[in-house]
Amino acid sequence: MSAVNVDLWNAEAAADAAAAIRAALGDVHPHVAIILGSGLGSAAGRIAGARELAYSDIPGFASPSVIGHAGRLIAGTLSGRDVVAFAGRFHMYEGHAPRVSAFPVRVAHALGARVLFASNASGGLNPEFVPGDLVLIEDQLNLTGQNPLTGPVQQGDLRFPDMSAPYSRRLGALVRSAAERADVPLRSGVYAGLLGPAYETPSEVRMLQRLGADLTGMSTVAEAIVAAAIGMEMVAVSLVTNAAAGLTDALVSHYDVVLAAEKASEGFARLLEAFVASA
Image (cartoon, rainbow, N blue to C red; front, side, top):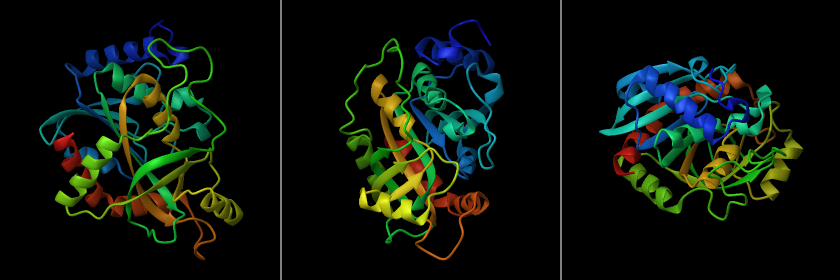
């Protein structure tokens, strides 16, 4: 790890990480950056000419400790377009600061990507949602109690980014069109990001429903905030892996979440390919 201010996980550190990625993988200039959530990493297998780098070899990156997060960066082409995919996240519930959790967004931007497609696995709060549903995230509730922009304003950041549309309506329309072409059903809703790692109680689920949330998870919200601050256009799709606590008699476990995501990953991969082709 170089002596550049990596401990700040700022724009300078992101440039340092991007340089390390190019030194290891060669010319990497992605049009689209992709973040693959729990159990959705198999979509990376569709990237042609894939070149991979472990997170442990990238300055400022942490190694995920959660099942379903491979902890590898993959560069190559998807649907004929240059992409970089982050297979796995490092979460705030693992002890990482929000600016660390969202650092891959800065690195993707430093590599040249101006479009970010994020994905995650979520619990369904909307009673109309069932496991296996893909949901376009239209808005978010940041209920983590943390913000990745806290502290000194970073070079190139907006101090007070507008969050009236954290998820690009233009890209959202492209995702809807891609879903139609790929023959993949797509719902839409609001994502509530919580700190975790405990799943929500039935009372917390009822609270989130009353706040207007359709989905609940433990990622993504910090990424959206950083993307807004640096001017990166973002869209996100969530895979419903389970009904939230209290909506069924079933208990919730991370193993079941990952298993459900893997079973539904085929439709997600088709949607992703169709989106990248038009982005």
